[in-house]
Image 1 (spheres, rainbow, N blue to C red):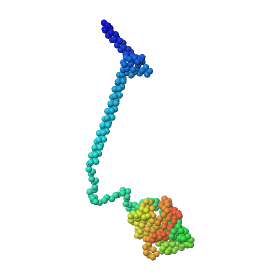
Image 2 (cartoon, rainbow, N blue to C red; image 1 turned 30 degrees about the horizontal axis):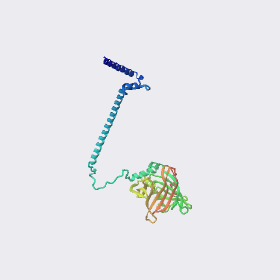
Image 3 (cartoon, one colour; image 1 turned 30 degrees about the vertical axis):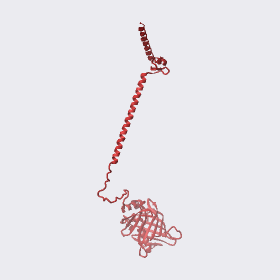
Image 4 (cartoon, rainbow, N blue to C red; image 1 turned 60 degrees about the horizontal axis):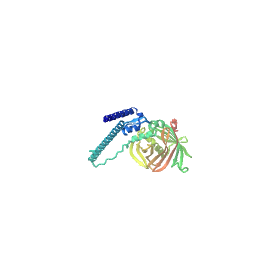
Length: 358
């Protein structure tokens, strides 16, 4: 009987403790850490009164389980990526090694070309220009054919003539000049009047209708042959010989390219209807005529070589004009012409180009 009573008391005591535990679980703010430590021996739920939140063993277990699952997932993802990258790298190295061991294919060659012939390098920018292309390009640089025809139809040029040079004053023969001109359809139809004034003499040379005569003190005279040759040579062998090659019916021929004193040049021959030949040296860079060469009979009758060089290019009413010209005979300077001013488009009286005896 005493044993039965003792068992009942233990059962009742356990039931009371269970109800007490449920009460503390339903009202966690009333529980204390000491009481739960005594009942569950430090393994029961813990309630912190000050913070007002509950940490249960079931909650701790679920959090730990979630953390383990997430860690395992990240680990598996990292391992899978590593394995995939290793496989990809292995395949790449294998293909590279196989390609390196593959024998190289021989270079394809042109069957029509000889085996021992060396192939020359061709510069795509290099072009072979014709004589007409060079001449037309130079005409465009000087102002274009329509502008030259319109602007330089007539005009007046003033300057000075020095023999042999204008750089040594007092030791040269110097004259001032005024050149009036009216252009015809060709060089043979041009009208030119050259008035020269020296300290002791004034005279004029007039060219028209293919003839040349002189005027001094209002009377006509026949000029000396050397003066005639100089005048006609200056008219036939000038820059206009190139600029008006079509109007004059001249023929062009390209001699080739040359390089002198570091200058790249086009060498061009212009031959007129009278078989008078003029060789032009044209800058390949600027397309300016740097100098020209021709041959004329000297006083002794033997042909002499003349060179006319052009300097100090300037624009005059939209056209290019060299303001300094040097004449050389057999390599020696004999004359220098310097333009002071030039005006195109001036109307000139036709009487200026008629002989006083007409």
